[in-house]
Figure (cartoon, rainbow, N blue to C red):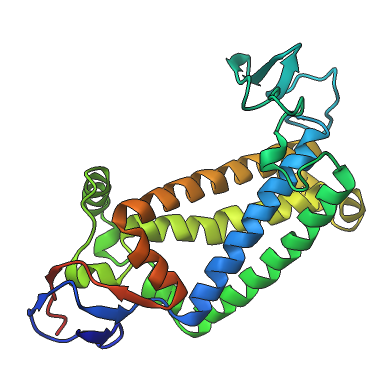
Length: 282
């Protein structure tokens, strides 16, 4: 079985067979991946408990039952619904009303699995700190190890619209990189990861801080940036939705690309290259 260090690619065009292993994912990246996954999952589920206390979202400074929300998850009798900017969608059995719950989000997707705003906040705030500290350490590692510039930054040819469009079409056709090309992240992966690191995580942290009355007194400029506490809450919810979409697509790609191989890479660091040809990097 051929074993190759990912940082020492051979300068030839030999055929890559199904036995070729490369060390693709370093330990700090693997650690952050799993800590980040756990933190975001717990925050989303505890956030659902917090949302259940007032399942409406508004734009602006104020928000109360008689104000005009842009999103509502509720029920009428034994029928659940989601109202998005006036468009009402029946959600009976999923949201608003289920067999075991009359809350916006059912116990299956909340932490704790019963309604407790105080406990939901405790879970949420604890793992928010875990997320912030781990993200800060990961960013420092990425800068000093050059992981950011070497592995995540888009190369000049990858920034071309024609290249991005081709990568998008390849993914839509389930044509994944093979051979030497499978060593590195593809452009769509890079964009998604950079979006999480530099857009979603900072936004979810800053909007979370904006919703705190105590921190509003210390940092009133946060309210100006996000247009009020209710707007911050809406952006916070949208960021959580963004995380949900990212997780769904990420897991789908893992399953389609080969779950055992992908999981081995994120647990041990070793990845079996799909059959292809090694490219000459000289």
